[in-house]
Amino acid sequence: MKKLIILTACVLALLSFTLTASASPSHWTHPEYDLTQITTINVTNFTNNSQSVENLTAENNAQQNVMAALYAAASKQNLLITENIAAEKNTATGSQTSFFKKTRKTPKIINLQITVNKLGYSSTVIPAHFDNKVDYVKTKVKDSNGNYNEVSVPVTHQVYVPESTYYTSHVEIIYNLYDPETDTMIFNSRDSRERGGTYDTSGMLERSAKDLLKNIKKGK
Image 1: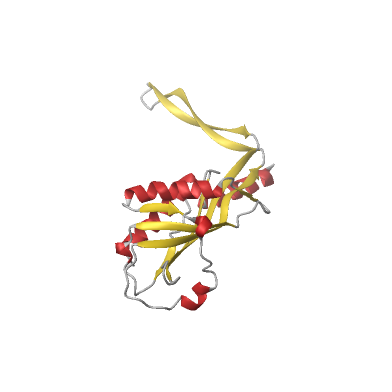
Image 2 (image 1 turned 90 degrees about the horizontal axis):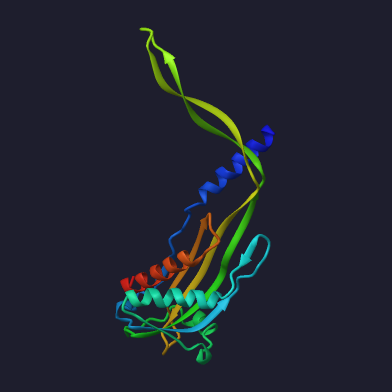
């Protein structure tokens, strides 16, 4: 029983480190583009690579949920989000050769390609165990003067904790922005986040979209 309690305590300690874990997105901006002039972001491609593998359960409706977060964030940044995925240009090859093209032009409309590598949750089963619980019991004790005073005495006892499941949500998205005229990549952001204690990714998606548009509006 002692081994089980120690093992459970270690598991809970490790899980506590991921309770609020969240990494800020890394991004790159083409030095010859002034992104502060952008007014419209046209989503031309959405690729969902997230799959239910090993301990990850992929989220359903990934595209719908990511786009909903982008629309909500855009309304606060005075940006217009449009979707034109059917009319997408094939920039996969051109982006490699045009990556270092330089231009002084300032596009007001840019194309956005989104790649979701991970979106969902993992789970860890915490076995049933006993935890120590401290209760305070009031009692009366006699002091040196012979008077009785009421005090609270700690009493430790064990309580049974049934088996439970601990969830961790995961988000990993790559955002690539292109000049629609030259197919030059002008902005790239890789956003990887996780949060323990929940299987809901909506909060992280909202922060991811907010950080993306905020970094674009900064222009650097």
